[in-house]
Length: 513
Image: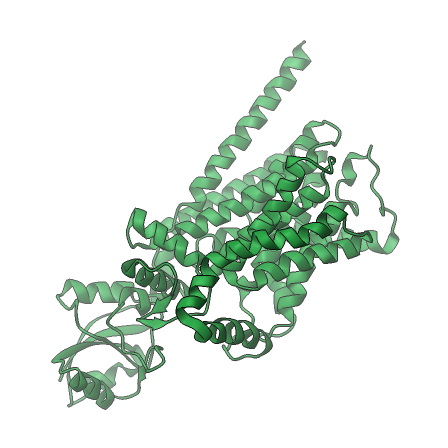
């Protein structure tokens, strides 16, 4: 009786831990979203959404009043909805990304829990879903990109949800019924969402991964799946058409040319958008996304290679608890999921770290498989890894909330523009001398100088500043200038210059003719 009571107490304590961990995950993902918008993308996308929000236009993206057809509308829709609830703030701009990050973690947790069903009912088996959720939630890639107002996590969640739906369909014991076909329906539904998230890659990845999985498994797709390719198209395309159809009706061929030809095919086949990297770029970026679990990720790959060479574990035995991942369908599916985006983006002429994010869930599944086996041998191991996960989550939240802004002071002009505004210069035009500031897209919205194509214009001399001011009949303007060029303004006889502040890289200067 005492042993039964002890076991029940252990299960209760374990259940409390996972509940507390889930609460910490949600809190951590929603913490630190108020730091200034960073890099070129966050301010730009957040401003596009703000312009759509102010016009009450859910169809046509614009930046500075000019058409901006680089990406689909899903991120903008999430930001517009958040602007309506929270106001136009950094938190609102990132809130949708945080929810999609949590959605990715939830999808993987569901995959892990459903994979457990039908296995021998042991405490270790029952915890695999929780361990997969723990590894995913505390991984560097998901933590970072869930805090960014960018499209990478916006694509990753629907792709993950779609592929999880397919795998659960493929492994379903009952080959008919509501659940069986509902999983197929959600597979195609989330493909439609992924199309609105980041374009054609939203359908290319799920279908290519599924095809490669069938190839690795050396099996023919079921009749139900083959037939679903026809009716599933009637699910995915209408979902995507919610944006694509009115977008084409309003903007016509310009939308097709900008969005599909230039930002899909030319971006992939050339370096037109100036993001060159070597072929192997994502082969080192992807492992970094799995931190702090990277050693376990490499260990899982090493075990996979050894198993493939020796072929000793080609087929798992149902009575062996430690072979959940030994060439099981989940391993083959994860391998397919990992390799398709990795090879696809490695061949691209344009590479950015976030591109590989849709492959990270697969890497986390492989990692969790190794971790799951690792923790079976010792309660101490479980406690140590749980502590690492909690420390990572809490540490990331604390850093984002209290310290990141100070470290990234040079990366934003928010404080410079706020300082100028506080001194009464809220309506003055903002000019860039020897620089352009992507951060100013959001914080200096409506006040920037642009070329005929809508891009920010860079000025190269004090005389050009004077010329632009005379064109607008402006008596004064604000100028953003690198500190190394500051003496051009302060020593010029053409203007009167007053330095209002600097962020260590750029200064903001009040200029009067």
